Amino acid sequence: MKLYSANMPAPNPRRVRIFAKEKGIALPEIMLSLVEQEHKLADHLCRNSLGQVPVLELEDGTTISETIAICRYIEELHPDPPLFGNSAIERALIDMWTRRIDIHIGESIKMYWRHAHPATAALIEQHVVFGESNRAVLARAMQWLNTELADGRSFLTGPSFTIADIVALTVIDFAALIGLDPLLGNQAVGDWHARVSSRPSVST
Image 1: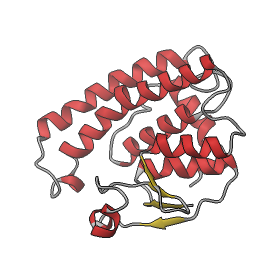
Image 2: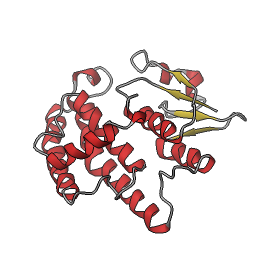
Image 3: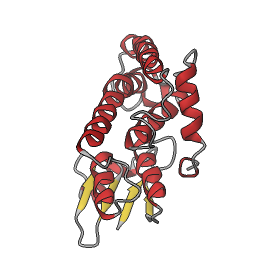
């Protein structure tokens, strides 16, 4: 299998990259240039009609899009170490946290990126006031996350590193890359961020 991917700062391909490294598997990548719109060309639209990356292509030609779906497939093939949990309650909590991060933190970052960042001005009709308003939305979400992590847990769902941590790390790092400051004033999140950033899989 191979992954149609993109380099930093694209956060979604990075999620799969980190996941695969945590599993200890080599996942060949074919890099597409997002700047040159290679993900919107006809050959890639045959893999993913939405024209997005990453896309995992299997040996039989089957393609899987969406990062969580790709990571779940890899987990089925390589269950150790478990990154989606070992029990019903672990899986539920990991899904809960993954969803929370995507909605409450990732969405405000996405809206800022789309509507207030100069790099996307030529791609969509921007509503800059709305985009900038997401700075405050993100700040509130990060304060909430900081309160949650202030109990001293090592990772989002407890003592083990999971897909939820990968999702959180990639969106928070992307926020910093586009000019936001999600860690400012959030010591507990900063401590968590330092722990996960020190993992060998993350330096990618």
